[in-house]
Length: 313
Image (cartoon, rainbow, N blue to C red; front, side):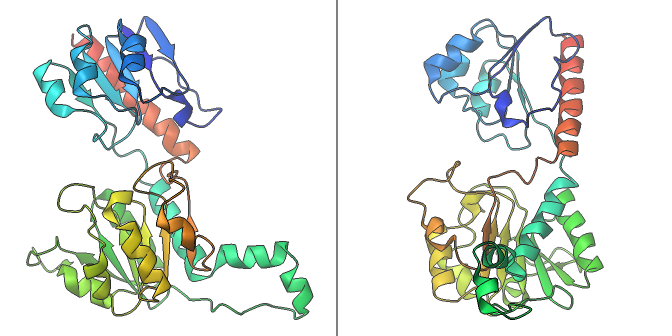
């Protein structure tokens, strides 16, 4: 079968991405523009499309009669028209479970940097501020310990549970938030609004859907009475960027640490960029998933899925 990988450049240089067994013709592109005509031209003879974030619309799928499988190099599938896949009998696979170490560790990298103003203090060393100050230490922004703090987790899947384990090792109390508007399903969960009110740190790990779009908004931010740090390694659209920016400026929350944004790459007019130099704000470019080990694991899972699909057809 013929396969086309549309955005190989989303992987790190040096990661080995061999064609899965069963693929006889393998064509790769580092990136593909958001142009349906270009996507169709590149995939017109393909049985299999491999992609991370290229938008595969109903229009594109309808113009690819040879297409049998769209294999994503990610867990989220919102960049592919799933109804069109069903209509045109195109299988759609994602990859899950590859970043169960990478994302939780990145979560705590963001959390610790924000709570201890890591980037702020790095700059004070690099730009000469510390030297000019003359004291053996610089402590103008308080360092905040994680121990004895309460961590609220929204989205208790594999990642959320691993974050729970790490947080408890730090000596944190962990609350699992029930879905907004629902009574807790059992004693392991706490009502959503109660988690907002009791958390010193709020960590987001839920999927983006109609119920979670702008889940963190002007209304829910007012319920965060302990002025928490918010960590977002889920999806940018879960947070209302303007409301979050206002909350930082109004000191409703202590900080924001995020790996994800509503538009990616982040756009120049995103209000979050106006708070980028805040000592408790840290951003990373949607790479929490991408440790070397995670990328290698992802490709192993993907290759087996593709090969199994080929062998069954």
